[in-house]
Image (cartoon, rainbow, N blue to C red; front, side, top):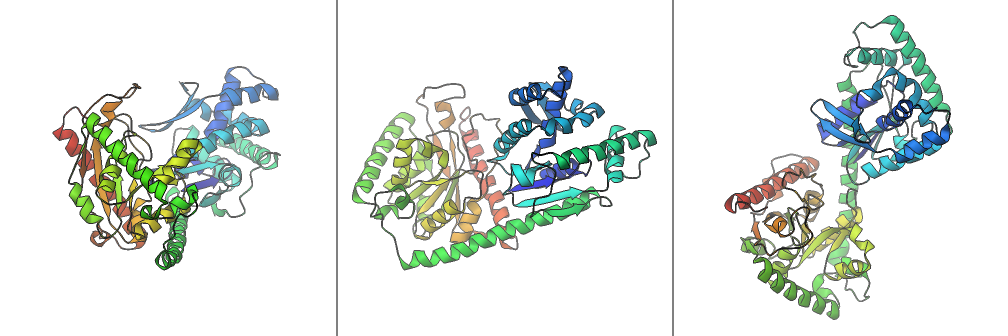
Length: 490
């Protein structure tokens, strides 16, 4: 989900965005810090801000990095921390001048889109809902009267919390901040490129007399409504698709990659079925000899998928991971269709081969409705789906993965179970920093099926969220059990 919070300086965007990001486990994208970083760099290097070309050169060359510290988000520019430096009065007075330069905004918007293209974020700034993320599910234009905003900034300057509205401040300093805010509002609202204007579909919230918690509550309500609307649309589409599935089983008569996504593997053209079986036999033999892999409790998975498809979730550490359960299932007479990120479709041979092997692409980090419905139809046809909730390979044991949701909704829509599975030892084949595989034994374990009938939560959304939490927890428990039983394996 993308949450875009726009508004003028001092309206409380940063405070609100940080709190929502923390409460909803979203990434926080501080776009204002990026423009401040450019302004600070120019000021430190003595660059005249009227020298537009020099400022543009800095914006295009700058390296901005965010890190989460004990006391909040830290900002680094060219590997130097500038968290406090970008919040000074001098930067306040000059950042709008820098941000008004079209080429600077283009450079920063490119960085912002790249940072948020494949993750769930809450972003705040001046043009998030209109330019950076125009398709954000939630758009808010947060404002407050100028005097209230000036007081908040004055409190912050004196080391207080901007939410403490009853704190006394230096009157003269607050008046200077007020004048600066009015000046910045004028610059931001009248610049030619990406002026400060609310998106047409943004919800306006005046925070002048609201607490941070009250503002957050309003935005989180909007988030819940957006999520419920999306789930309802998916459910409605799924209901329509279910009718089509029961009426007719399409056959891939045309040998195109699109036809393979919508057809049961057993209905693939003869040459595709022969290719799949040959590759599975060869892959199974090669990997068994080289990596001596085993899948404990495989029978549990085979029984669970005997009469219907199930969603199999598994931790992801290497390219070997999808082959093991796929080979075992196919050789046992079952169909298992892996979900893969569509980035691989850039490679011609993979774009040709993966659909013919039964795999289904997904645009990672987005609400890919098409992929969701393809998977749902496959499940309803009795085929199982393999998903890696981590979304990418976890290459180091200490790496903290970001779980990508969606697998529980898929299972809920198809009215089926989720089977957790774990793999250990595959990371030892090609350790981090190495390029050549080594023959190491690999262990897999299948857990007990998880049914929505056992979920206590009420409401579809709550059930999906709870199932994702439980299923992911079970997957990691299986992994930890294997690591404990085979010390040193990763």
